[in-house]
Length: 238
Image (cartoon, rainbow, N blue to C red):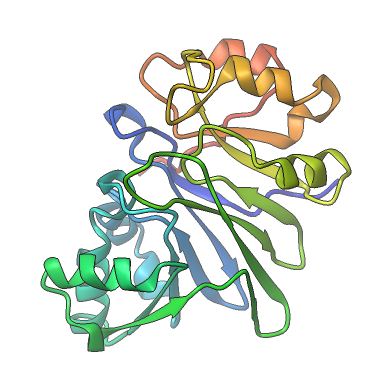
């Protein structure tokens, strides 16, 4: 059985301060790969001294809601001016990220911005495939299929559905783990997040132990999710 590679700094939604904003990281070829950088993420990285530990730091952004990018500017400024490191930022809509960072006072020359096309291959071993997600109308949101050599997983970002391509690949065993945005209440598709009830309809019982519920709201029933066979990532205690 494959082993999950993600380490979670937070598993909460924007309105759930008890579990921090959802953000995770993994290590590849001695480099740090961080997914999202919302409120509280930079302070947690700082306390863990993760930014000092890695020579190269990469950040994948799923979308630009504040619970996913609020401390991205702090991260870039700190790494450049205090650690002499230029962070690499990945996002399919590069102009959106550069405009956002400019509005934060972050100059373009202190970070490297990589426009993620459909498939990005890094060092011939790491593969990142961007998948546009259905979340809100105002801004684009992306999920990522990531293959590290150890496993292949899908990180949903924020989404009110599971893309049919992703679901098919997962059910056929072509994706090892799903990290899925899951909320407590069922609005039958009229909500920017996928409900636990909807997730249960999509994932058969025998596959649920490979699904991690993330971006959890304040009303989310951990016991119910576990009893249904789904998993909750362990959050690093700081």
